[in-house]
Length: 335
Image (cartoon, rainbow, N blue to C red; front, side, top):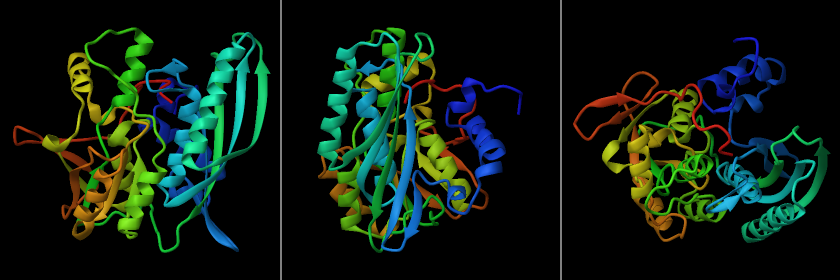
């Protein structure tokens, strides 16, 4: 590693993983942390719990489809939900820049309360710090959450198996493209809107349909490409995607093609990837499509028999393209 932190170290790709492994895991590493799930899965005398924490530094703070507060609650709820847990309680901490608008702060806090209520979670503790002007870009928010893992559920990024089918609940790249276009004041036809949403009710319906789902991950920083590479590594499997099956809104397709970006690497805040045994895939897909957050659910690939540990894309022209772990700066400050 070089001697200073760069933006690439926070982009959710190769550099982020290198920083985590060479600094944080070097000193913090243990059997729970080293599993690299979205939430730690811990056994307490009375229950199996999922526990997670995250920080949010998005720019702009307000965007089409949400704001930093909604993003913070949804992000923490989703990390618990995709671990097979019922989210229960959240804590939140605010770092606020001197001079920040009280009206904007109230709007953010009000939206957090509304989203938490809709998701069925309680915000039970918090902290506030105010720092000198210029020390923070407006406002940063940290949230932590705890939930109870459902009985007979074992969802883990190391559980993918040959024969699993990969399902995503909707279109790729909506959040990342919305943030980038609003930040840079790009004007395009259509209505780019963040997909920011709490996925716990969707996950509940999936688990009710089949409680043997192997892996669920929400595809945030680094997009679907980062998530699938992590699962490939921890499960030691090869993943084959079908380019024809990747769901994209026309607005996102147009912007990514114009800017030369790959939607597989663009961040989402309301999308999950589920690894389901092939025999149960249609059953899970059917219930997902009946849920408001899964109407566009589709199978995008499968875990194959091939040797090695990689993710690749079967292209529309009949070729194969490796989908590597993202490297360098993707879209900074998207969450």
